[in-house]
Structures are given as C-alpha cells and as structure tokens.
Length: 198
View 1 (tube, rainbow, N blue to C red):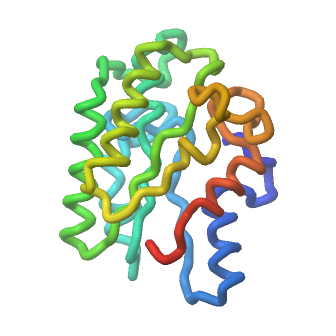
View 2: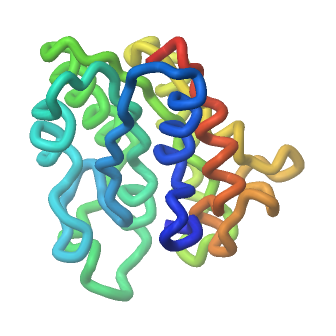
C-alpha cells in the first residue's frame, strides 16, 4: 500500500534489487497483506499472521530468514469502528502483540529460520491515529529493539520518521495518508536492511 501501482517499488522489491546487485543467489518472497493483523483475522484482510505464518513462511522451500513487520493494524483496529473489515475487534494490548511476535520467533527457530524484527513505522496524522495507539507502537518498538529475542533488528521506524516529529513519517517518504510510505520511503526501508543479517 502506498507504492506506485504496477512498478514493483515495495520495500521487498527494492530489497530483491539490492540483493541482485550484489550477485547474491537469494530470492525475496513477499507475503505481506495490506490491512492484515498479527493476532486477529478479518473478512477483508485475511487470516491473522499467526495463522498464516506456517504456510506463508515456514512452508516456503529453503526459507532461511524472515523479516517481520507486523502490529500497526492490530493497534489501529483498536480505534476503528466505522466499517466491518476489522471484525472481530477485541482490544489489543502491546503485550499481546509482543507475545504474538514471540510465537512466530519460536516457530521459525524450530524450523532453522532466522528472524529479523522490523520496528513499526510512524502513523501520526493518519485518520485513525490516537495517542494511546502511539503508546502501544512505542512499547512494541522498544521491545523489538531491546529484547534481543529477534536474531537482528531493522529499525524502519527511525529510518522513515521525521526527526522533528518522530511520530510522523517524513514528508518525502509519506504516500500521503500518513501511515504508508511511498516509493521513496520503501526504498529507504530496503536500504536499511543489513544484508549480512540475511
């Protein structure tokens, strides 16, 4: 969401181009789903990531590393009640999101897959932004950065955040909705991935 349609400028596409440029024999599989949540499924946005992690990651032939960028839709759905796409809509806590990340880490490690945790990007200015949601985002990001439970961390939050307003995406990286990066933002995210961690 937010990248130019039909141009393959999402961050996994940009990461694949980086890898191709280094002549490393590696593929990038993008199993991201717009609107998808970590903990709860949705009639519009598919099974919860915890449910689809087996088929979308663990069952991928020769998968070695997964980059996990999940949680913002769980946070936002706490405050969205204007349409049915986020039903069911139980209130989600930072601890529940963290526990969901932990389940995926354990499952991946049991399959010999390295896990890279990606911090959740800013969303201040988005139509469903709340101060409480921002507190949850900060708490989850703090855990991703400091817990040591992921094998490595890519700090997408710091990469795309406006230094003068860290809760917002930089204007040049914003797709216009203040939640999703645009092409330049996705490019910056891809370049933030340390290829040695893959």
